[in-house]
Image (cartoon, rainbow, N blue to C red; front, side, top):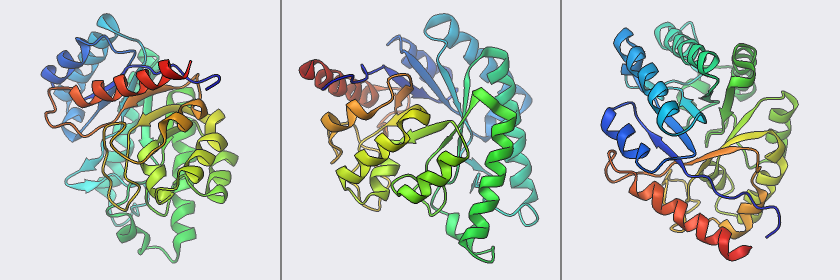
Amino acid sequence: MINSMKPLLGLKAGTEPRQVSDRLKYSPDVFEFFTNENDFTPEGLKRLEYDIQWVKADATSKIVLHHPMRYKNEFTELVAPEKKFPKLHKFIYQSAENLLQFAFDYNIQVLVHGSYARHTQFFIDMYPNLENARQSVFDQLDELASWGQEHIMFENSISPIFYYGNTSEENDILERGYRLAFDTSHCFIKCRGDNKLFQNSLEHLKDKVVHYHLVDSMGGKKHDSLPLGQGRIDWAEALPLLNPKATSIYEINLSNQADAKEQVESHKFLSNLYERSK
């Protein structure tokens, strides 16, 4: 295994003090905050800024702020038509602006989903066709990219919009010059569990990927978010295809949100694989 990326200890947490404190005891190389709607009240923004300062002081300056996934129980889908969902649209952009302000102030990163999956088709059906819906999302990503510059990245989905696992779709994304976040499970699911197709995507997009969500999957339709080694991804083949300049975190479903056990175990799995391959 030549030129493999030495695995970074990348941990994810919400803004609750118990979660942040738990992650910091491991001295992570990368820290990703998974924000939610409550983090965008005046008090929530103060807490988030405090947490950013806390992580920078105690562990790492490699911090990613994950754009909130939901607003009023609806997914923060860029494809949602503004005229029909004005409050959702306003929250998506206001929260992105709040996070980008922190990103510029503290020299950290913001991650925005190009799409999700669960309600995407519901919104797509409000457009004349898929291509119109897709173009709307690209137009908005272009705008956000101009706002965020070197402080924003866009993550792949398992929906029909903004996904990895298809060369034509990937070429359209690459043409726009976006900085990319690569979720391994989302891509593997789009590749229907085909490791060769998955590896092709890793290689094709490698130079534009600035951040990875490392997570295993069975490659079925279900978004399973498994610890590394418990799914069907061939990590020995995948590891050399990761961009060594990128950051990464282990985005694993936790049995207890205040305990990063499954994330840490995934790091041990990948680190052991890396050591054996040297």
